[in-house]
Image 1 (cartoon, rainbow, N blue to C red):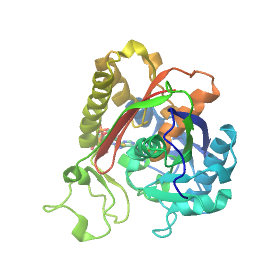
Image 2 (image 1 turned 30 degrees about the horizontal axis):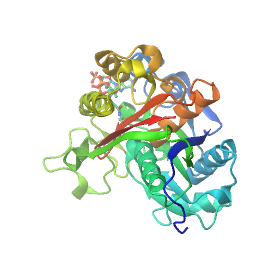
Image 3 (image 1 turned 120 degrees about the vertical axis):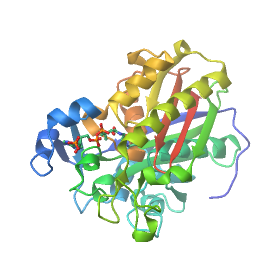
Length: 335
Ligand SMILES: CC(C)(COP(=O)(O)OP(=O)(O)OC[C@H]1O[C@@H](n2cnc3c(N)ncnc32)[C@H](O)[C@@H]1OP(=O)(O)O)[C@@H](O)C(=O)NCCC(=O)NCCS
């Protein structure tokens, strides 16, 4: 799509949507085919159920459903979109980009398309890309969707990782606004590839770090995770991102309506927020129902909050995420 607009006065989140596969799997259901239990999973992670897709449901199918929902909730037609950003680490295929397939499936050709592979940080990065494209005046309406089917890349014999994840897509339409008070006030994106093997998918022996990887589960092309290392990294990354966002905007926890974090682990989230001085009711949590849905999770949270009527124009919200890469980032918006 060609660039065609003067820079707008503001940027707004115009619509949200989400999609999950039909199959809901409780911890007890999981314990029928994984050596685990509700007693182990629930207190350590906060997860009670998650949704798992079947072979027929592709990442692009979930993403298309969520984007269609978000576009309609924004009062737009698919052909109004200038760009579609799909954050995923489980693309349908390596080429073409999943975003291209989504554009086709929703009937938005020739909308621009790009995939982002930043694991659980993908949606936060996509929101920043959308904010900057719109702020520059290049585009008016951008769909950002986080869509992942981690069930297809976990090793189902590795109980330390497979119980944590669920499949889903969460979508946001970001649009130009006439209201200068609607804006993205702050954004940051970070990475440290040197820590990449804390959460990675090796293809062959040469991808295993020198000296071996103590957490390697023995199966290539599956997700490997050093849970303790990721936990320690994530608690600090979350806190640092939120502290930076507050410092740079001069806002205090009292000013923030809601923090919308990537849903990785309830213990990790609650300990981070307590240290930051946020009360529990300002942190949105739905990991109990969906598990960790990777790039989708923040989209699911935002959609649920919107549907529940808990966000109003003028509210300040913080999106914050961390994940494979390792990557981490945040953005602070006035709605
Ligand atoms: C995954 C996590 C809950 C595991 O907790 P932990 O205390 O580190 O657990 P460990 O892997 O050390 O395992 C402890 C014990 O529980 C067992 N265990 C591990 N997974 C289990 C499961 N699903 N069911 C039952 N037992 C399990 C282990 O075998 C081990 O038993 P042992 O002591 O007899 O050897 C925790 O590390 C975590 O949340 N990390 C962050 C993960 C994350 O958020 N990743 C995504 C980032 S975007």
